[in-house]
Each structure stands twice: as C-alpha cells, then as structure tokens.
Length: 601
Image 1 (cartoon, rainbow, N blue to C red):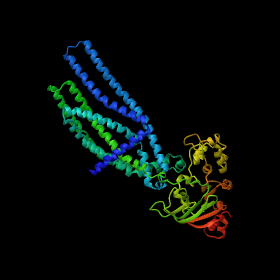
Image 2: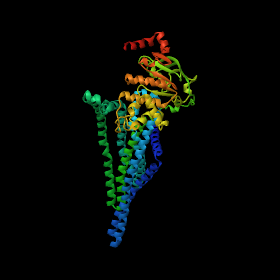
Image 3: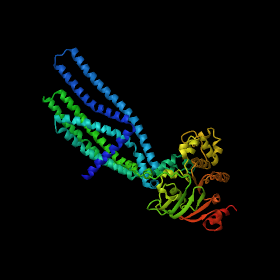
Image 4: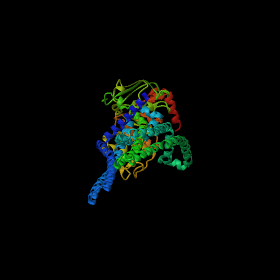
C-alpha cells in the first residue's frame, strides 16, 4: 500500500513538472489547449443527443399528423445543428493539431535550452563518469516526452470528463453495466503497465549498447573519420560491430514483446464480448416496449463511446506511467548540483594576485589514484611560469584546479592568502585566459570563433583582428574572400577547412582576445611548424609584458625564458627555479632538457 501511495505521488509530481514547463513556455498556448479540450469534451455528447433526437423526430413524423412542410422545416433545423456540431468538431481537430504542433516546437526548444543550460553549469565531476553519459543520453532520448506528456495530460483529463458523463448516464439505465465494462479492461491495463515498465528497464539496462550503436554510426558518417573509413575500408568492420550489438539487443527485445503481445490478444477480446451482451439487453428493452427509440439511440451511442473512452484512459494512463518512468531520469538530471548552486563566494576584484597550492591532494573520484600528492607551490600573476614533467604527472590537473573545474580532495588553494573557495567561481575564472591542450574547433565564422572567449566584447572587431595578428592567424585569414566573416569548416555553410596548425592559431587568437590577468597555455605550439613556432614565442614576449602566464610544454627550449620553471613528478613539485638555476643544479629538468638538446646535435 505504501509503495502504491509513493507511485501515485511520483505520478502527480511528474504531471506537475510537465505542466509547469508547459505553462512557463507559453501561457497563451496553455490556456488555448484547456479551452479546446473543454469544447472537444462537450461536442460528442451533443452529437449523440442530436442523433437520438433526429431518430425520435422521424418516428414522431411517421405516426404523427404534421404537414410535409412542417416536417421538412423541423428536420432541416435538426440537420443544420448536427452539421454545425460536426463542422465545429472537425475545425477544432484542425485548430488543435495546429496549436499542438506550434506548442510542441516551443516546448521542445525550451527543453533543449534547459538541458544546455544545466550541462553548461554542471560540476565537472559528472563528466568523468560513464554513468553520467548514460543518464545524459537517456535525457536527450526521452526529452520529447515532456511535450507529449503535456498534451496527453490535457487529453487525459478531457477523456476523464467524457467518461464520467457517460458513466453517470449509463448508470441511470443499468447501474452495474459501466462497472462490469470497466472491470473487463483491468487485465489489459495491468498487462500494459507491466509492458511499459519492462520496455523502459530494457532501454535503461541497454543504454550502454545504444551508445555503442550511435558511436559506430557516427564513425561511418562523421567527416573527421571519413578519411580513415575510405582509406582502410572500415565499413565492413563497422557494419559487423553494429550488427553484433544490434542483434543481441533485438533478440532480447523480441522475446519481451512477444510475451506481452500474447497476453494483449487474450485480454483485448474480453470487453467487446461483454459490450455485445449489454447491446443485446438494450435491444430487448426496446422490443419489449420498456424503452423508447430515442433512449435506445442515446444509450447505444453512450455504450459505443464508453468502451473507446476506457481504452483511451488505459492508453493515456500507460503513456503517463511510461513518461513517469522515463522522465524520472530527466528530473534527476535537472536536480544535479551545478556550480552556480555552490558559488556563494564574494567577487575577487584585484588586478594582481599571488596563487598558492598548499599541501594539495587530488583524485578524480574515490576509486581512482591520487593525481596530486601533497603539492605545494606559489605563483604571482605578473610573472611567467612553466609546468613541465612527463605525461600523467599532474600538470593538466593543476590547471583544472586553478580554474576551479574541480576542488582539491584535501589541502588548500589560496589567492592572496585567502581560500579560493571564498571567492565566486566566475570571478576567479575571469583572471585567466586558457588555451587547453584539447582545444575545440567551432563551425562558426572566424570572428565568432575568436570572440567566444569574451562574448561581452564580441562587437570589438579591432580587438579580434589584433588577437589574430599576435597569434599569426591573420596571415591566412586576410587571404579569405570574406576575411573574418568566413565560415570555418563546411559543416553548415560554404566555408573553408583549416590545417591543424591554422586551427591552433585560431584557438590561440581566442585565448589572446580574452585579455585576462594571466594566460594559461597548454602546449600552444604542438601543431605548428618550427618557423611558426619561433614567431609565436617571439610574440609571447610582447604579450607577457602586461600579463603573466603559465605554460605547459614538452619542448623545454620554449620555456627557457620563463621566470620560474616548476618540475612536476608523480603529483609533487620535484624542483623549481629559472632555467639557468635548474641547469646548474642538475636533476630531472636538466636531464630532460639534455635529452631533447642531443636530438638537435
């Protein structure tokens, strides 16, 4: 009983959730739907009454003494009313369909925006979990259920009203008739509910395999993979992988659907058998003179409507129950913790700062090893620093903590002697302008690609050009016909494709455009040729005159001029100092530098 109550509460919470989104999206469409549903509920009963009244009038004319003109006039009046009701019903269906299509577009757009907004502000820890991507995939896959649910709820309550009116009228004739008819539909309802629950559990349990299918499909159609697909003839292998996973899923699903189909066939026949029995009773009542033809026609219409109404309730209830299960994940997703919810710190307003890592330990989750182990160092925003070390030593993790994508597992990060958590996340991030090692290429115009790092200044075209000049991107952008209005990639527009080095210069332009207190450059020249790399680092000298920088680079010759080089090993600071100091006190850095230098001798 307790579980049943919880199920009902959960059902109403989903209904309230969907109605809230629908109302928020468009109050006008919401009210129009209610009005239309009210008319759609009333018209069928009006038509049943008019049909029965017309039949009764014809019988009166046969046995009555009215003149032919009177009969035609009265009959025509009834026909006109019936015509008006039928035309109104059809018009309402068309208007309802139009409103539904427009409203659905609004709701789906609102939902997509809500998902994007939530994802944009979720804590980074969620993106490290495969389970989260299953949830996100489920949310995207089932998000359309919200708009469907909204209309189903409108229709469900309309059907309930019609069913109630029909129930009361049939009870007046035979009090037990509607109760028996409803009971015959119960087995089908139970089977339908179990089928819906099983289908969703199947989808949820196999979400990982769904993602595998999407991934293999994306490889076959994605432009970035097209060269490999053609060069190595990958289609047969991709088809084999796809078919193997699909066949396993299909066999399981077929077995499940077959079982419920057998039950459905058996239980779906029961209501029609019982309904036929009541129609026989109804007909005998007329033959025995216990019921008028008009009453027969009216009750007969109600009985024929009652069955489909119960069936509609079952279908709509099934849809609502299905939505309850599917949207439970959506609601959980929308309730995930965001950075905004934990961002209660004060604004950091300083133009310069000292940042300190003090005994910082960090791991990405409880099951993983520590990436940083008792890490301690200090940096000043007006100086240049280099983080060096072998792959996996923790350099990128330091950057992520600095930008507050994550919080330390233990230890402290201080800014001007105060815990960084005391300041708002947004104000801390404004201090930095990062270029990540895995930078993104956007299918926008050159100008848009650059100003993404500082959208508030997106109209500053001179600043965008200046940033491109400093990164070296202006050399090739100025040759485009549309210059900085040229679309990059041919994904959406007739744009241009860039080389890896050119994309890196665009990403660097974006970093420079942000114009923050301190730059973070993670392998900024990994895709550049030697000449471009040399020009780039010469431009850095000018750039760093007004800003500090943290550089991450495997090419140690690029960081020789930094004010301080911090060598990271196994998540700790192994050594620190200028290039000259570290070379004079040979250890890990001197060894790595010499190894690289020997390759050029």
